[in-house]
Structure formats: structure tokens, C-alpha cells
Length: 121
View 1 (cartoon, rainbow, N blue to C red):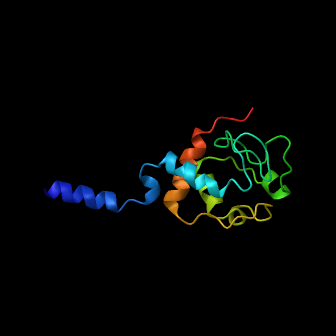
View 2: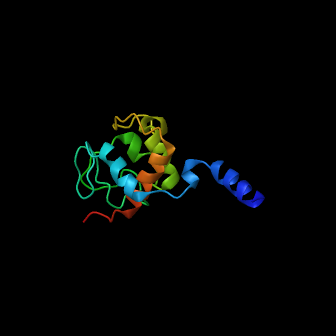
């Protein structure tokens, strides 16, 4: 019994991002992004197909801000998490006007969903 209580206490103390992310919920969270982003083609923002692992500012045919082009960022999980907290906090001068996603679990779920998206052709 005591081991069970200790295990529950340890799990309860973990941050939400350390828990398994839910890509299906991330697909729902992605609705916040759809006003500007699509999966397979550029829109107001660049397409997000294959975004995880991609260099920031590298989608052909999209006019990025100089700030994003010069950022040197690669969209890994940690960088995406910071970006999703507020793009202009991570890259001052970005053209992306988005207040961010405050909920850590929603950000983790969104990133899990983005990881499932194949690169756009």
C-alpha cells in the first residue's frame, strides 16, 4: 500500500509535459492554429506539415520576417513549446501575431499532433 501511495504522489508531482502527450487532443488544439496555418500548403502562415525538425524560416514560397529567417531556430519539441507560449517572446520582430497557449498540457498535445504530420509535398 505504501509503495502505491508513493508512486501516486510522484506521478502527481510531475509537470504536465512529462506525462504522455495526447496527439488526438492536439488535433483539437490545432484548431487555434487553423486561422493562419494549414497542414499541406501555405496560407497566412507557412504550412505545418513536417514542421518538427525543420529549420525556422525555410518553407519555400513563404515570406518570413527577417527575425524568423535570422533566428537560427530548428523546430524541435523544446523550441516549439517556447514558441507556442508566445512567438514574439521567443523571436522579437516576428510577423506572427498570436498570444500563445498558456496550458502546458495543450502545448504538449499540440506538439505531439504536429509530430504526426508528414512533410507537405
